[in-house]
Amino acid sequence: MRSANSAADRGRLASWLWVLLDRHPDEQERLRVELVAATGGRPPTVDDVANLPRLKAVIQETLRLYPPVWMFDRRALGPDDLGGTRVRAGDLVIFVPYAIHRLPQLWSEPEAFRPERFEPGREDQKNKFAYLPFGAGPRICLGASFAMIESQIIAGTLLARFRVRLAGPEPVTPAPQVTLRTSRPVLLRLEPAALA
Ligand code: HEM
Image 1: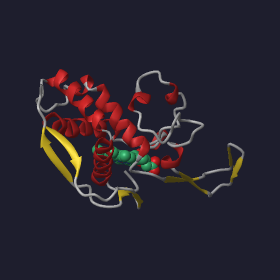
Image 2 (image 1 turned 135 degrees about the vertical axis):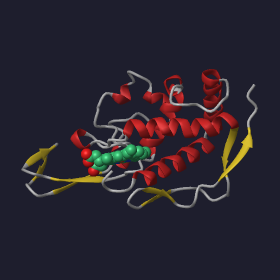
Image 3 (image 1 turned 60 degrees about the vertical axis):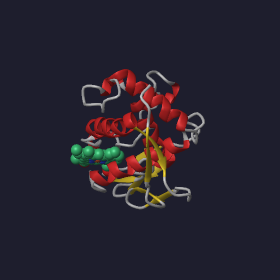
């Protein structure tokens, strides 16, 4: 991608995923049940991801609340009108997915962690420009599908075997730089999970 390297983006996504799953241990259990049903508890492969819809929705919801590319920009080639705001040729237009993803006009209970909003046909998904973790239009992220698949495999591999908790007492908050970093390193405590 253009504004940061993609390994860093994946790192950002992984950090925020574990922060959210630490806050929602019930969701973690739900994902483990889905994984056991799909794979019998072995680490998922690319052939399994279609059978992990809840894990995909959790990753999509993580990218909504904490988009690694929290802002990006475009230089206007010509004059335009953006919802009543006049744009002149050469203007720099800055898009902030972090803010767009939390607009109450576009998202119900925008601050809440609700993976089910990404179920097919949900109201929240009616505006295709409401959700921009991978950008939009001709310059949309080329690695979007790859990033989703590898995130499901990496997260599923850990979740199949471990209950994952954050180590350290300090809260983790956003620290926006080129990508949306965490205020402190996200260190994890892994406890073996029973696969009943
Ligand atoms: C969670 C992981 C990722 C996120 C959040 C992400 C996000 C983005 C965003 C927002 C853009 C558009 C930037 C803009 O319009 O100015 C972009 C572009 C791009 N991304 Fe990613 N990306 C991720 C992973 C990847 C991976 C894994 C690859 C390659 C395998 C990749 C390759 C690219 C490329 C080549 C572009 C430029 C496309 C163009 O300008 O035509 N990205 N990415």
